[in-house]
Length: 427
Image (cartoon, rainbow, N blue to C red):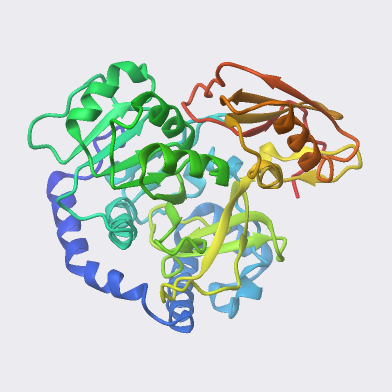
């Protein structure tokens, strides 16, 4: 919400109503052919480029510096010649805000600041309704969530209420409260769906000991490795659907029941990998936010596009967006940068770990901290060392058994992190 109060209640109601009327077309769009999805994406990309060049000071300057007009961008190859928008650009939002939207009518969304200083993004009300409600509704319905199901959100801003009011369909529990305090309220609320960080759900399932039985679990905000997914599904006896998004763009991609990858909301978002190829830095261009256009925004993650089409039949393309945050890449002694996903894949088949975390403390030293299960022993440690040797050449791996692994101050749990500053951008 902006300092001046944001959009009026009348504007909010009008845009929500308009959004609900248009929702059936959004629902149908996921079943269009890939070619028709691309055509729709291109049409909306052109409109976004025109809005940015005409009304955002930063992009107006960039187009002038390049000596081009929006009409000169006739293909994605042309579009890729535009400069990347960075987090530093967001720290001067006046350069991005469109001059044809009153600032006091915009929605604000602030990052957690877990990787540095906080930034604030702005959305016009139509974009807010689209990103916060409609796109999420499409994805959740695809996984079986119905409007009458109760949803429990486990978040940083959960407030102090331990009990959900009678008749309420959604309740937020604070992840900063001890699990023992919120567990009775979560049991009584008996939600069909949970939404939160993967690492938190591992701890919640262990504490619940089978007393919580959601039908489905939606995870986001952290790298979800196969080991953690399996621990959550075993603990709750429910399927996990991972969601990928960020504060600046909102929901980007999501898993359907086929679990073949993450469906990109390509009808409303352009996803690029830089440099083009198998995997690289993720660049996002949302195609709905007219108030604060973002062209080729480098979100700080690494990911890849998948060539396969999902067996579910949707025309929305598949991506793998969770190779890890760029800041969590590990620099090996030979100069190569190792993505977190490589480490998690190497150890996923090793039994006996309840939780684990890789921490690079020195260029040639990595500590693997493990919360062991009852069946963790010498064979488990040997299996870990054999699995890690090929992916960590020249690195000394120390294995430490610990009783718990603490979450970050934000409440997120980082499976892989480095305390060694890299000399350049991760690749």
